[in-house]
Amino acid sequence: MTSPPASSRLPVGLLVVITALLAVLVIGLVVGGVMALRVLPEAMGILREMKQELKATRQATQELSAEVDRMKAIAQETSTEAAQRQQALKKAMQARARRTQEQMAGIQRRRSKIPEPAPFNPLAKLDAVIDLNKIMADELLILSGHLADTQTDLAEALGPLPVQKK
Image (cartoon, rainbow, N blue to C red):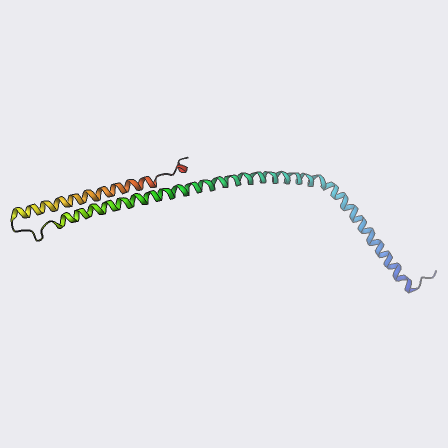
């Protein structure tokens, strides 16, 4: 038997190698397909679970979004209420400060009417001391009243907001 010439052996060898590779490829595809069929039900179950989790996540996200919107509304309401209280407190404090300053100006006018230096007459000195004590007592009453009114307004302004009572 004679062997084919060397130039025709190369294409035949290549054809044999290609056929063998195609056979391995087909066998691999068949084995892969069988394995995939065995794993397919489990994969489909996992896919269903993932879809259910996705739905639950969407629902939870929507609920959280609604809660965030509610919290934003509460924050806006609280901010508005706090700003209103701040403005009311500012007006009350300004009015009280003006009133106290007017009262203190009246006290200062009364003090300026007391003669300085005190007269030599002991009764006149006693009258001056009594007048100064009256002025001092009036100053203390004015300042105590101012402090008490200020604390009352501050306590009202700093009290809990309606949102906080809920």
